[in-house]
Amino acid sequence: MCKLVQYLQHVSVFVSVSTLTAISVERYMAICHPLTFRGTKFKTRLALIIIWIISLSAAVPELHIMVIRHDDVIPASLNPLLSSCIPGDANMELQYQITISVVFYIFPLSISAFAYIKIARCLWSSSEMVNLNMRGNSAITQLRARQRTAKMLIVVVIAFCLCYLPVYSLNIFRYVGLMRQIKNDDVLVVLTLTAHWLCYFNSAINPVIYNFMSGKFRSQFKAACSGCFRNRQPVNREEIQCDDFLVHKRSTYKSCKLRLLCRSSNQAINGQTGHTNMNHTTLTAV
Image (tube, rainbow, N blue to C red; front, side):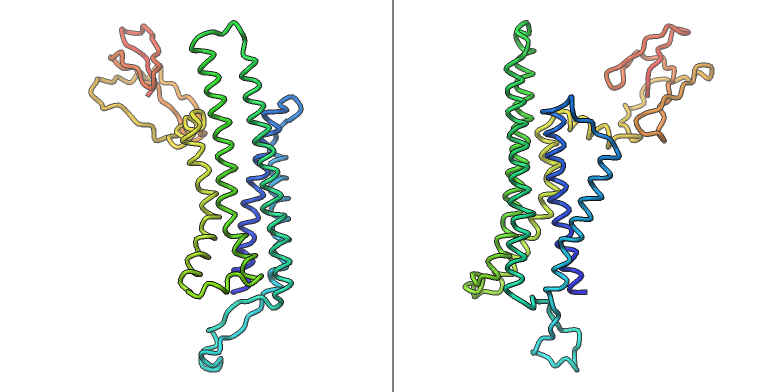
């Protein structure tokens, strides 16, 4: 079980890093080469399958390097569960940690940085080619929106770099002997747990970054979360259901339907009002 936990920890990190790298490549192709790039569900599924196969395979050496040894504090005959999982070969573990640091940190970081820098340059250069006939607030708004997008992508790369640097650094420091200089065990525990926590935190913080820095993502996120649970206005008006004109309209969620009711008020919901003179009532969407 101890070896399995180590294996799954590495797999989860590899999958997360590889997925973020694949997303950066996908965005680069979609923004910088929109005419030659065509995203399909098949390509997405194929990319995910390849990511999982590579991640599962890359973590296999950890199963062979790590060995289970019983602690000497209590005899194994009295407590066989008191054991620890440690590297059987320190030199092999050091080589493995250096390899995965290059393959799953430096290399993905370089790709992501290259992709997002290219995206930023593409956005900024395209903003300079705004139609000269567009004057005033329209051109300024478009320019600022593209610059915010570029800034958001740069923040994503910086967050990735900062969140994954501690765990890879600690793994290398551990096997070159630098960690032995820290005599306080509590400090070591805090450093190790914090480093691993930052890896998972990076995956959780990305949607937050998008939500705060991208208005389009924020609006789409609200629409996805609302779904069938749309906020309704307080019922302070008389609603009369017109059986002859009951319409069901599909929303983005197939299971959710919007009912069109005839009501006597002229109040607009969600900023849209359909004016239909039908028995002196207004047809609006609820």
